[in-house]
Length: 419
Ligand code: SAJ
Image 1 (cartoon, rainbow, N blue to C red):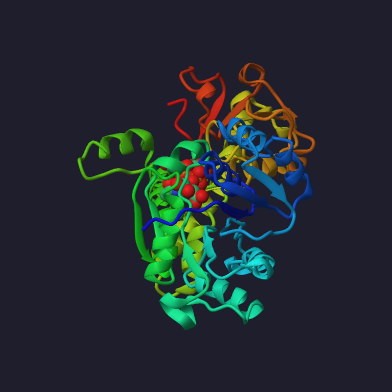
Image 2: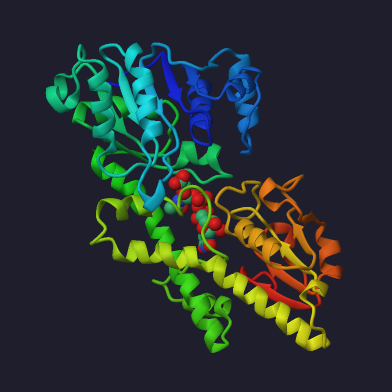
């Protein structure tokens, strides 16, 4: 029988937690959102949002005004707790589980028999069991699936988020969910919860398989992008057009190569494969190599820019690089968003600013001011850059850059926009 939830809590109100909280609240479930950031809590309680995601602002305002979503700094009793906190990596690409541990310890004092705890954060295999152990250590009066199986007081499951930034509100509803309980009953109860808004399938498995499935999805994409990035370097050596090559190869019914670029950014695909490597370093050879290929791409693009600056000087008979104007088009980690986190385009622009003695124009239509790491750079309009730069570096294929002829001058096109 499907269990009905009246009050749930979402711990971590970031890119995943806040949309998820809003989605549950829109189904008239009372949601207590918990975050350690005072500013975030205040913004949400005022009906606002602190992240940019289409339609999220409208959803949050509606559920805060109707009283179904409320944010707080410390956990309160609820029937289910969803943990959606960051899992970055430390030195040596080892996963940092400290945010999960802190979240688990923070909810432990308010847990009651019958509660469900779901981990959503991308995590190495075994983390859900580890999280349950942290909670069990803090609440010896409660029983958990590891020791009490189907009779445990607390149900525990892993249910990874799989939504694409920029399309989160739609994908939350329409993507299939993997629900990995620490026991069959745990999976069943967690499925009841997600079914309150998920229209697609909730597919049940064990927590460890669910953890690995999430890592596998993002590693699959990383490996495929690494293949495309490797092809772009091979084609450069052989003077072939990689974009044409991929287009032609993809005409084969069983080939679907992704697109090369300046590297892989964001907080997921560039991070998650390391969680596989950290657990199985001997076995995860393609996964590791893909990461290394994608991580090496910004330095390769930068070397192409340096070659182009030298080529421009040779062509115009000059000898001072300070006279060469370079323009970078795009700074975000992928097209048509304003998110600069872990952006290869941003790191290329930053290195260029430090290394190139001449003017560097930075064109990024999705931001209003430059981040501190680009202090000294000039945020320029596309039209200005197109007429005044000598070397044009295409880094992010934003919609507004497409469909225009290449500008005059030397071109380094990491995205195939000016083919
Ligand atoms: N990229 C390329 N070439 C491509 C596709 C992407 O260079 O052909 C680059 C992008 O420019 C960007 C990076 O890869 O720098 C990642 O972008 P993305 O659009 O592939 O993925 P994310 O990080 O926005 O979201 C991914 C998604 N995972 C998969 O598609 C398997 C999303 O569904 C996950 O929920 C998300 O990671 C996550 O949170 O894990």
